[in-house]
Image (cartoon, rainbow, N blue to C red; front, side, top):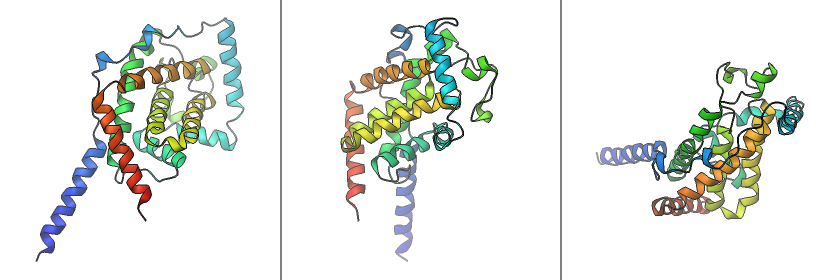
Length: 239
């Protein structure tokens, strides 16, 4: 009956792996993350040339909704870690998921979480209305609309997507162009879907870069990155 201990070991290993994938490691305390409010300009005021440019970009994005690009924007609305793994997995050519890539998944969760501390105060301070609220028009994902969610600036989805894109450039530099294109397009999807103005997205990329740079100053984070690189390398080399 030796198969019982073996089965137990396999089950225990699976549970540990799954638990690690769900883990969010705090590499930097929220209060020590850079604050976007300290370096980002205020969002464009209504009536300004910058706001007019935002409005034009909103209309251009809206015109793309009934197209394959519009379909992609709907898919990109899911900013959960599992979806981020899927999107960036397609960029590097492997089916990333939480079970098979627990270290990478944990890093994605941790980076996503860390970016919130960088933009939280900025969102609250400016309380910018979202395009669908200003234009009183539906988005591509009506289920995610809210009449009182005044947190358009900067874009949280874009901040996460761009920070995770920078992470994957470190993990798989051979696919840096594909990775950065994915990160960029995920931000533009927020304009197309009607949830953000272009200035929200542009500011989010700056915030994401600042947040990611701060994470890279932590030796523990860099050690984890090396482990994730090895995890991906081993999976790629496996038959």
